[in-house]
View 1: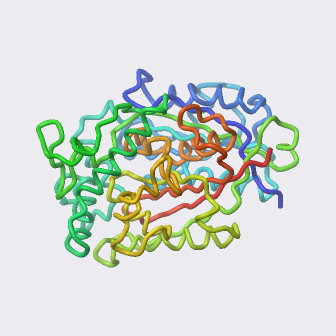
View 2: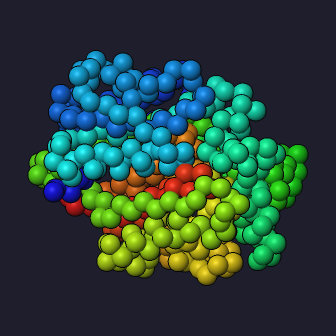
Length: 389
């Protein structure tokens, strides 16, 4: 087998887009990605598309839409993936399997979502499709309500950490100020994020609006190639290990505060790469809600259970800290178009490793970690990336 490497990427701005649908969003990111990699559509052996949809659009069969934006892909095999909020990462893993099995040499990974055209109440119900509806469909506030319950349970077990959640939100919004692709480039500060007000009301349980990621549109694209092909292009990044791990879907059948699937993925990923957290220059983490980032601190091993608050309070995860987390602004500031997010996180990490992250840049970044989860840490993907050339 030959290891698949990332050789190029494209990324639309995240936010409320003028692009009317995923077809248009995909086309806006695919062309720049091909140019960045220095390849043409005729060079691509397979297309792997991540779109959650689940009701955002009546148009499904989303894997076929890439060719609608560029007919040169008309005869290129294309497959659509869906794995809740980890949809884009699932598509990436599928593309890497395709290359590493020898079935193709170049693959296109396309993640996209058009969410803002859907009424807010419907968005909440659509996202609840990533929960176990038999038991969780009636949770007030949709997925925010589900994570509100998680935050409330965390506070009950370990103490009120509202201020630390506000610190995570403020950190990610400050980081997002440096990301020209971010949905909300505004530095709110800890005091605003920690204060319940008309502009920052409670959304669900202890979670305030600033604790919740944004409803966004956007697309991100990665170009992958086998090692031999990658040797002949301008840049290449390896994904040393790429480790998925699942947990049971129903909240009633597990301790959701453990984030066990994420912890197992991190442990296996670090072991497979032969590295420790101290070897990483940065992490792009899944902060769909601030409490998720705090629980990810614990899952990755930065803190013991119940002590994730120390990571932000001691400055470890800040941009200038020992292990910067979400220098891109994360989902909290960059935005969270479901199908695009996992692809976007790898683009952000690749930019850091190439030294092309502009004002987001972590000086001397050599290795990046990333974790993407679907549902309430039901499906989890950990990647550890480093630059090959």
